[in-house]
Image 1 (cartoon, one colour):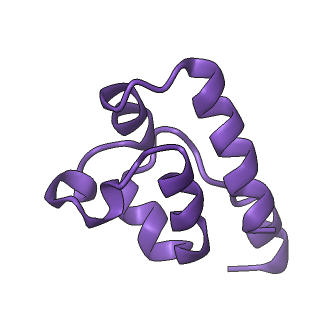
Image 2 (cartoon, rainbow, N blue to C red):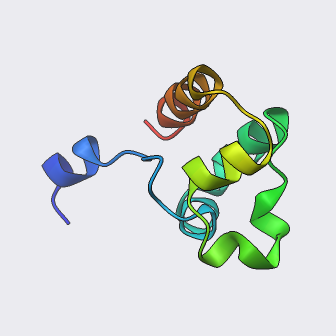
Length: 75
């Protein structure tokens, strides 16, 4: 992967919770802050961040804020 590709890489709502936690463990505390304790859940491998947020009652605005915070953390 080139440096340019790394710069563009970001966390998206359609990514699985397990993929996000595995690739960027530094964002797990952010998930916990928003009430998503999903990285330790057996469903994390297949459930998307968006789906996990919905199951836990997060609004679209909260999901958007969480994504922004998570993407700042991986830069």
